[in-house]
Length: 188
Image (cartoon, rainbow, N blue to C red; front, top):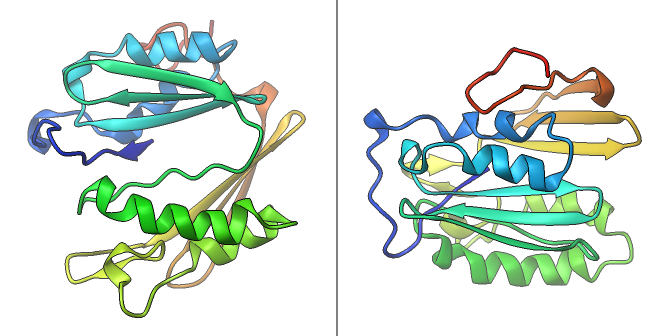
């Protein structure tokens, strides 16, 4: 889930909205990508500030956006590394420079996964506010999280920007399923 800040998006009304961080759980446990998309788009459109949800099932990728007026979905086969980014400065402000850096350092690399960590730690000395490892007076990158899925295992690694790390391994077969977007604990 990425926050979305695009020209023309509805202004944030944080006190009246649900946390966008809760959206992901509605896609977890879905049987397939279409099922996950149906579960997320069943959520009330105006319950959240604008967001982009990136869903992946095997090699099928779906990008679902909520601009406050409607849900939009695009799908494709994941056949190469891809970059998603957002910024409260405006997504269009950071997209071009970060995408160009991603193409040069990750997408075109012989070993893209090895280059991914360097990409996430990159900061332009003269443009820290739009860097991947962003710093500005009112905000900063505070952590990085990697999720690696292989077979029936998912590994989540969390690295706070101030050092230290935590790794959590989950068996996908043990993840709870929910029967509807409104239910968060009933197995289906």
